[in-house]
Structures are given as structure tokens and as C-alpha cells.
Length: 305
Image (tube, rainbow, N blue to C red):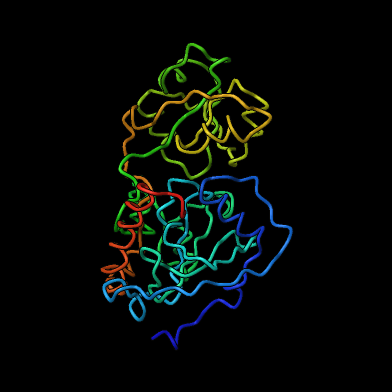
């Protein structure tokens, strides 16, 4: 049934360290490395049911541009990545069989890291620069911001609530309990480029323009070196990694969800370029339910991802 299917030449051979990197990526770790290579035998997968057979409807390789370094809020997409995957440490991507409930859908899946991996460019702009990208994860505010020149259409969200936060050291700022409290100080608020929420917080009077510092690169060094700052993050990532996996910090951080200040957007929307919606509609009619089921499966039993 898949005799005409093209398979990445290196997809069925994966380094053991590379496999560890993919697993680390799926749960939001960034301190992994790949140094040794061992061949892993690809597993033979049972074909998915016809309702989940994407061959001939979707691109042979469904490429997804993630909005940041891989972490747990994107877990549903890693749930769809079958065994025998390969990690490209240069391209910051992982490729393998796109599976539905562990069964082969007839096409491949490539997940590409965003954020620092693409120079902090927005996902929507990356989708227009690289025509090979099928889907992108675009937060709701970015969908709106891109509407004029780089329109994308969100087809399903991965999350009900945005986990975006501002975080701080409670020992340095015991008086802070919310974003508004940060704005009452003169502390620097370190965020990454292309973010829209900082200006929204300024417009709402919750932060001051003079506080914004757009040099955040995803690394913990700035926060560790200067615990008087506030910094962006995700509730499902930084609080855990700073306490459990950052030896130079090794303690809890305090944080406030942006949604609790009113910046309540759909986060991690699986999106397509507006000019590709019609072409991809036959694919999306089958793929979107697979993504939604993968989301439920990941939340219920995340071990696979």
C-alpha cells in the first residue's frame, strides 16, 4: 500500500544518544547532547484504519514548525511520532513515521524546533519563508499580528489555556505576587523578540516600557546571574527545569500566569498558511482529528511522548 512512499534516508537509523535527545526534547529539556551513534532497528508498524490513512492526501512528509524549543505543551505532536525516528542536531529537528494510536498513517512527520533554532523569528514568518513547512504552532496573538502580511489559519489548538508566565526569584522579591506587582518596581523584565504580550502589558499599565529587555534566549544564565530580574517562561517548563535540572539555581521560582492578568489567548494553535487551506483541506479533514486524539492520549498517558 505504501510502495510509492518516500522515506528519509536516515530515518530508520537512529543514534542512541539522538533518541535520548528526542525524548529530552519532548519533555522540555535543553541540556541534552549527541555524541555516540548506534543503529536502532526500526519497528514494523500496523497500518492505520482508512479513516486515519493520510497517504495521497497529506504531503509525504508533514513538516511542523514548533514555536519554541520542544517542551511538554507540544507533547501531542510528539505523541504522533512513531518509533525509528531520527534526530537532526544541525537542523534541530526530529523525523519519523506519523502515527495515529501507534499505527502507521502512511506519511512521515518532521518536528522542527523554534525560538533560538530559527533566530527567534515568528512561526508565521518562517512558514512564508520555507514553503516545505506544512503546519506551524502559532499562538493566538501571533495569528492576529500576522493577518495583514503573513496570514495563517488556526485549525485546532493544543491547549485550552496559555501557560505563559512571568517568573521571578521569591527571595529577591518577596513582595511580588502578580505581574502588576512587577510593574510597580523598576526591575528589568527579560523577554524574547517577537513577543506581543509585553507591549500589551505596557498598554494596560501593568508594566513600564522602560522595564522591557528583549534579550531572552531561552538559557537560564541571565536569571541565575541576576535574580533581581523578571523573566518570561511557560508554567509547564521553566519552574520545573530551574528547580530540578539547573544545578546553578536548584530551587523554586515564583510566577504569575499572563492569562490571570487578562492576556488570555489560545496557545499553540496548529495552523496553516491561508493560501494553502484549500489545498490542504482533504489532508486536514483526517489529520486534525488525529491531532486532537493525540492530545487526549498524551494528557491521559504521556509515557510514549
